[in-house]
Length: 206
Image 1 (tube, helix red, strand yellow):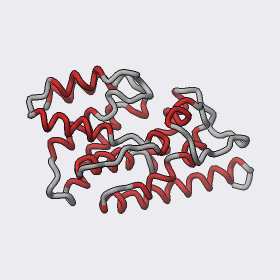
Image 2 (cartoon, rainbow, N blue to C red):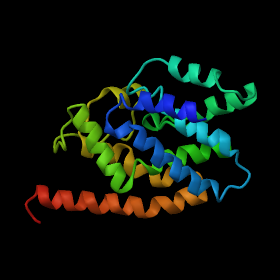
Image 3 (tube, rainbow, N blue to C red):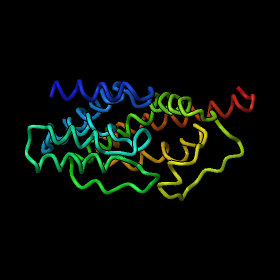
């Protein structure tokens, strides 16, 4: 496991600050918090899925080669390897076209990842990613999309604030575990307060 950690650390160090190894560490802490409330879950599957879930993120690569190589080298059963693949595949939001989380492990990893997308850290990550991609902070003329294909979700270079309305503010109600739902409440409200304050400052009212 130590070798796997070091291997993935090197991969994530090539990504921008929104998806670096610190993101993985935070997601793992979230996953541990949820794991304590899901005693039947396989902790090993959860840990490995957390470590690998962004290795082949479509924002950074078109290939799953790196992910598959790391999974194939694991000294675990083929059944568990497939379970890890399934967990990773079921994490992404995909513009609202997410796959169903079919196991408790997948639900834990998904909720843990989404918790890191909201709240104070979520705000920081959103603007870090937007900065790395040259996105506007906000765009008054931009319309929030309520329906879009996965390709449309990934291809349009929307402003960072628009991203809150197209994804981040939706995540609280998409949590799948009781602990995840509980943890999401405060983080969600923090984002709402932030956006309200941002609007006041944009309008010169604060």
